[in-house]
Length: 346
Image (cartoon, rainbow, N blue to C red; front, side, top):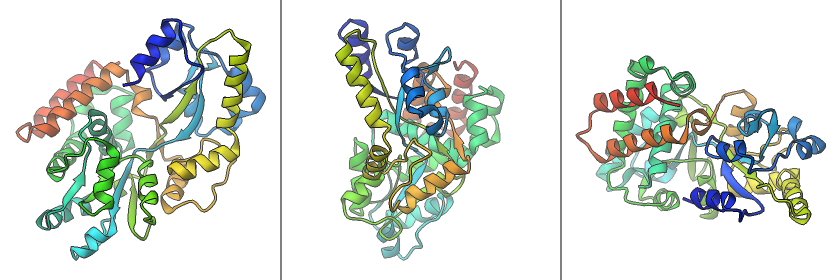
């Protein structure tokens, strides 16, 4: 929503001093056209090239061997958040994976509880689909599709399993009419819903509500199936501006963003992970610890935003939105359309 405004200001000669984008291909055209500032020299002077981890956070904003962004945090999307009391009060064990969650859904529905909270915005639905792709299909499936663009594989049984999981989600989200992700999270927090698929930023909502990870709520990395995360995140970019005072301010902001103390404080408040390998979090929650362990073990895939173009991702998003809105849209039809998208992906 903000990107067209950001782009028009930069191209129109009225750039802001700094702007935030997620890692991906969306900003590459501005970099290639020479609108964005090269921060390589600053990064090398400050030692960021060695400190930032995983290195894909830097790779995604490199152009012709030069760096054009300052990563601020890692936000992984591959999480299933559960309200423990909802399950125990229904006489159920708290699910430990996606299969158990799907099996518990009918009992929740009988109690008037929406099994799976889902915001109605298109980006949230696309997020859920690609979480299922990594967590149910597995990291190899995710990469064969989005990195290798294997259209024949897209027609196969591994991808069929993902679309069946999406069909299960379609049933479980019935009655979830929230628009924003935080309103859907509130449904889980207040016991109106059993769980939510959303990024690690949801943890901040649970914490603000006074709930404790592992006691009041459960977080299942990779939906408890394939415990991989996509190394997505936020990064700051600096438009090219000739004013020395603005350049100095850009440098100062960049240093603050990657200062170890800032990294610790910010990630603790948001529930995300730091981008520096040399910082140690103070009293990380079980959710944050699980994310750190996945990073350290190399259980990481690139973000879909870094692997395909905004146009391709838009086509996938439109398909997922249509599928979730229409209970008569079959798994087989959806998978066939998806394979066609992968065949022409860029």
